[in-house]
Amino acid sequence: MLNAEELVCPELRLAMCHVKEAARAILHTIVVCRSIGGHRPIEPRSVLSELFDVSYMKTDEPEFEDELEQSIRQFSEIFDQGVGRSGRAQLVLNFFTTKSRKQSIWNLIVGSDEKIVFEQWRLPVVVQPLRRHLTPADNLREEANLQASAAQQVQQALYFVVGRANAKVDHLPPPPQTQAVYKFEIFVTSDGRGLSGSSSPSRTFGSSLNQTIKNIPYIV
Image (tube, rainbow, N blue to C red; front, top):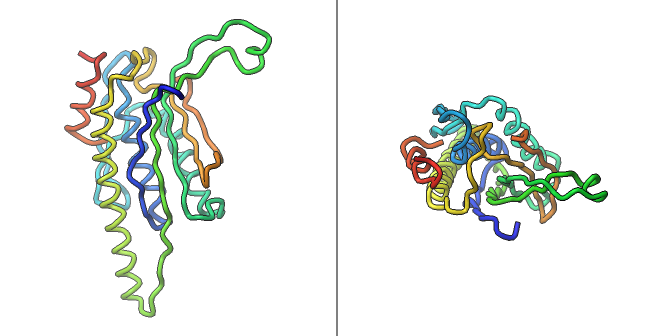
């Protein structure tokens, strides 16, 4: 990862019940921003968040839906299981290409393809404890304030993702030919430790996203 472009999203301070939906909106947006290959232009669809007054974009390649949802569940579970004792964790998404290694006995063990990461996105999250009050009305007000704060943070993170994806394009390799999105892997870190992850098979934000794709040097 010596020459990889590293992009760190603004830290999100969220209630536990908002972690999944926030990660979902941001991950899908990152994937759409890097879906510039394949045999046809993608047609991302706009999705209204289930929890927040926020819309984001999803790719029209459904095979990646399960991949992203699995990573989102893993990310949420580390807080449920108390692995992130500090209440902090990061969701990390790497985009990579592969090239064939020279034939050798060692490469028969580690694999014939070398993974080359060219871009890494990090999403740091801090889980905020839910304060309980003496009256139901105060509890409802507390929950409403946390949801409004989460929505604002997610909106800002989406603007960050689209803006940075638009500005950082010179490092991108030629687009993949068999699918729209570059190969990617997602994993979770907590307290500096890698916990879990998954990889894509070999293989959202309206008008700003269109401008992002137009600025990719390989797209005419």
